Amino acid sequence: MNDPTGVGPSGKKRILTGIRPTGPLHLGHYAGALENWVRLQSEYECYFLIADYQVSDFADDISRVRDAVWEVALDWLGVGLDPEGSSFVIESLVPEHAELTTWLAWFLPVGMLERNPTLKAEMEAIENPDDGKTKGRSVPVAFYTYPVMQVANILMPRAHLVPVGEDQLPHIELTRETARRFNREFKPIFPEPEALVGRVPRLVGTDGNAKMSKSRGNTIDLKDSAETVAKKVRSMYGGPPRGMNEPGKVDDNPIFLYLDAFDPDEALVAELKERYEKTGVGNKELKERLTLVLNELMDPFRERRAKYEANMSLVREALEHGTKRGRAIARETMELVRDALDLNYLGRY
Ligand code: TRP
Image (cartoon, rainbow, N blue to C red; front, side, top):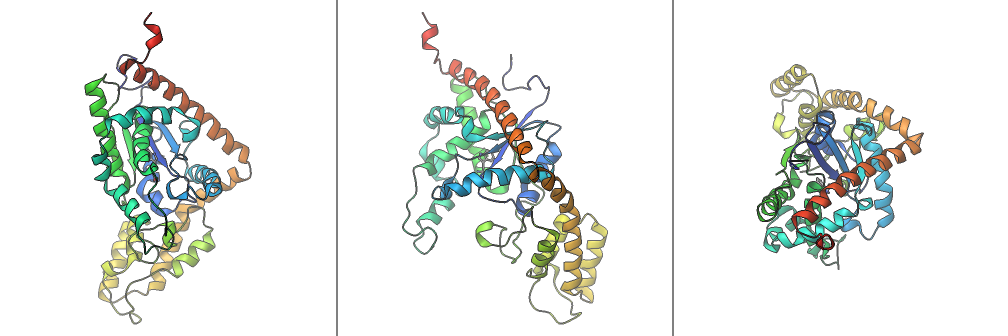
């Protein structure tokens, strides 16, 4: 291990990315990040983290977090992440994360966290007196420590690449800054990781609103049945009301955003758009197409997921093996960190 920032014994560069276990994953997660994970998993040595320390606003509903660990693992297996080639890591079972967080907290100015827009938005939401869900709550100290832990997550396997959704970019910037400081002040042990955002950085919700998210109840979940998908698409917002065969503006109709995102037949979508703007296309026709496209994408997810759901011990094994590998590289990194910080006191005499 001459150059700790370089590739490991596998000859591959490393990916670390993760998700907070809050419930089932949806198409926004898929198009924004997961699709990249699947695509890159054989090219990189991958660590996929279930960030169960980062319970955030779910801390008052711990059992949901625990259940969601399994949900996330099933969704990952469903979309085709390979638990043999990659490592599914449960964050809290690698306590080195907490250890590294404690050290790194010294190298991150509070101001840098306070400027982090993702964090700012989350804290403002908690303190918003008009939000019934968070009424009477105050910002926990963990809002200052969790971004540091996310930095620790990424630095732990000395990752080169972090494929994430757009909202995570400020955290990656923080990680790069921390790596630069650590490398400069102590020893150069951390690569400066690059972020990679998915093909569709922000998927609108089925209600046509800004973003697909569980709290808004506008998601299509990866585990939804074909019937549920058909139903959700049928009730999707399809732009301002139009008469039958009345032309519309493509930009006003979010169904086209979904077709752009998921329909592999680009020529067909282009033709639909042209027709929609000239002579009009009923939303029914668009929705039928979208249902077909989504179910074709999701059928293999469902099949794989069902196989694992019928045999949960395979899921446990995936988590066990992955976490073991995550812990092994964490121990290696912590050796480097202890050496860099000159923490091996007892070896002195
Ligand atoms: N913050 C991420 C989310 O909300 C989860 C996460 C934790 C993560 N640690 C990470 C993402 C490290 C990328 C890298 O989903």
